[in-house]
Amino acid sequence: MNFNTTMPESLLPYYKEELAQYYVAFNEGHSAKAWNHLERAHILGQKYPIAHTVVHWEMLKFGFKIKSSKEILGQIPRLIFGGVKSFVGKVPVGNPGGANVPPLKPFPIDNDLQAIFVSAGV
Image 1 (cartoon, rainbow, N blue to C red):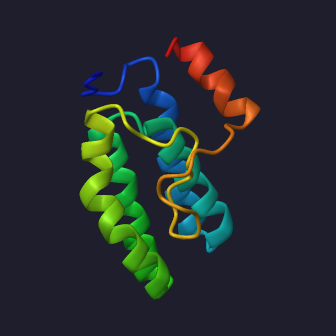
Image 2: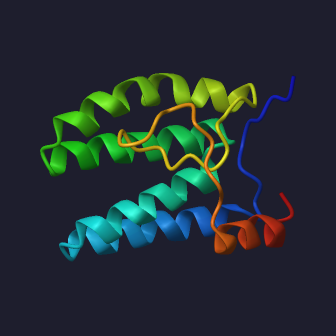
Image 3: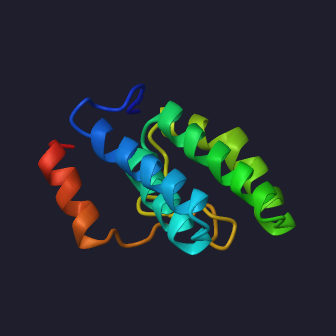
């Protein structure tokens, strides 16, 4: 079993940039663009418990901000179990993390995110 703990330093700047872009887009009133950055941060961080949990926390808060009961209810189990799944290395790779997709379904990873993983050596 592969236990993941913290995100590699080589990947951290990309993850932080996606979260930063989320805040900018949301504060400028661009909800769809903001959400896309959260999904990208989720894909980058989903193998690492703390990063994974932080994104689900932000997704839960996003659900409250946009008053989406579907997102709020969908994020609660993801917030509880996502970090545990990361720790034991059992995440659905490429899953964007929102309540609009099945929580255990893997998804293809966009080419630009694949390039980030390669560049970061992970």
